[in-house]
Length: 95
Length: 177
Ligand SMILES: [Zn+2]
Image 1 (spheres, protein in one colour):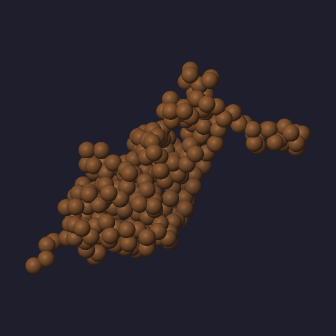
Image 2 (cartoon, each protein chain N blue to C red):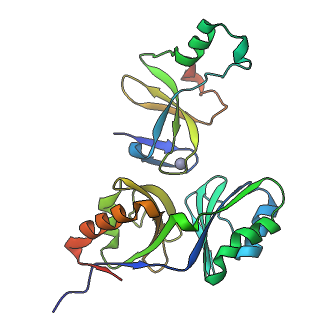
Image 3 (cartoon, protein in one colour):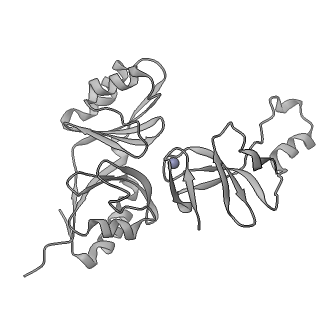
């Protein structure tokens, strides 16, 4: 159990108020019908699954119900950054 | 002789609940709400405003819950729709919501043991509101000037919520009005 700072509510809240919403920065292909099966499968299923900093989406399900991005270390669970959807994480994010 | 109860729960009947979404930077939205409901939309996260018989709770950066007391509350949605112009959402959610008032000297302790949220008055003074988990249900909790709390939750959670409350408050003495 950890606490996450919601950038919309502007305070740290208990993890149980949130839901994990998958890896961040995976754009939906503009024209899915032009993709091969393997390209579409790549988009749907292939994830980076890093050991270390991971860029991921969270939604404040029981609070403001808004999405945001989190840079979280998958080893220590330490949250390194919280940043808005549509933006890239601050410097250490290119891990 | 029985002691006065530490926690008193009272139903707040006869109020309309309207969910409003829109751009708070747009004066047309703020003006329409002020004109129809007589209350200013709070811009500060986790706060609520009260004026006359209306309350406006911050739910998200572009979302509020309006609670309006009185017989004509069900007309609020229609009046807002007529007064609004542009990109917005107004939905009457009266049938889905229950509004209770929790008061008494031990109400803070019951909230603190029921939720991971920090309801200590240092962090949650009058004027603050928060949507959080209350045991396994979700609820909107608002701190009032008189030391009581307003709690709004979904009707489908009512049985669960009220049973939890009665159990959690039993050790302090609980009365349901
Ligand atoms: Zn939030």
